[in-house]
Length: 196
Length: 196
DNA sequence: CCGATTGTTTACTAGTCAGTAAAGAATCTA
DNA sequence: TAGATTCTTTACTGACTAGTAAACAATCGG
Image 1 (cartoon, rainbow over the protein chains, first blue to last red):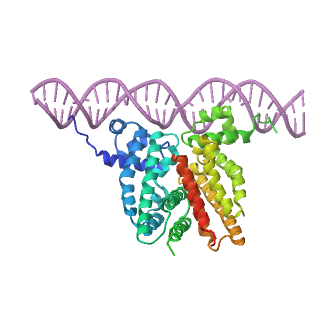
Image 2: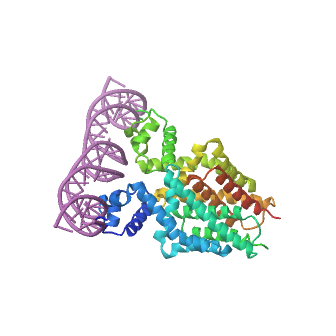
Image 3: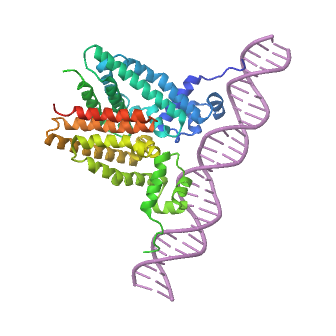
């Protein structure tokens, strides 16, 4: 009912998310979002609400879209699926260095606002829970396949910390060799879980 | 020569650092810093330069002061010194929950500005290098004491990622039990390095 | 075709932002 | 005491901030 919207809100939120991802929430102005989307501010506000709402939607887009794809590749995948994620993060640096240095929108937003914005906090809980579910599921598959023995939840927690640690190292300016060393160290830890 | 400064610049930078730590760089206004220090903005600018200079000095204060104290407790300390750091991070949550949830000023600043501000980037390199030095030194001591065997650098990298992963989890709003589980998982990984 | 509803456009606002100019005050060296 | 130097105080700036009011346009159901 009423006049139909002339622009694709999903496409717009991806462009919005990209700006937040690159600059961070506070350093992003509405003018930046107007430029990135080609939409006047009043259109953005009408479609998405406040600037903070736009961030929450950007995080939801990544959590439910691209990241969920990654989680599904890890679910039930055994040790190789976990190690593969770490390696692919390191390899992104060679394929798209600029993008790779931006780390992860969700992780960046959690560090910037996780302890002050309850709605960001909720998404932090969702993110950590989903990552742990994926790792736990992959580790349980590894147990069933006889790759490893016992203690799945502790190892899922370790993998979560390794993952977050990699993203922070990347954003803090670690160079290619340093990141490759981190990915190798993470892979070695995962390998060390194999039953011998 | 000239009129002596009436306030303690070291004390002021600690107060400045505290504001950056709690709110982040971009979310902090000069008015916030005036209130926290009790100094008019012109005095802050005269003493420290721009807002960014104030952040760099805040990071340097932590790197060369409180953090260096922690690094020195880890240097040459063996596996227990490494595990002790993780446990003390988890325990801070019970002693001072509000402060604990703020994570680490250096890590927070690296995630906010590490890929866009070269001067923050430099401090990221220094931070990662110093942490790795401390862990490497502790691990080499562990080798000498016969606690572990081989492969010190890979394990130092693992410990670095675990450390950063804990700080991010904390800032992203993980509750007490979740953080305790992370610290236990990190400790278990370190224990698993012991030669059997 | 009509009223209701929604989207778009333009212009605007009050407030806040980082940073500074300028004058007066206190201490230095000589 | 004199002049140079530095700090402190006050007031200010122009630019930018997030968010909105209101007129206009387009599409809806009936």
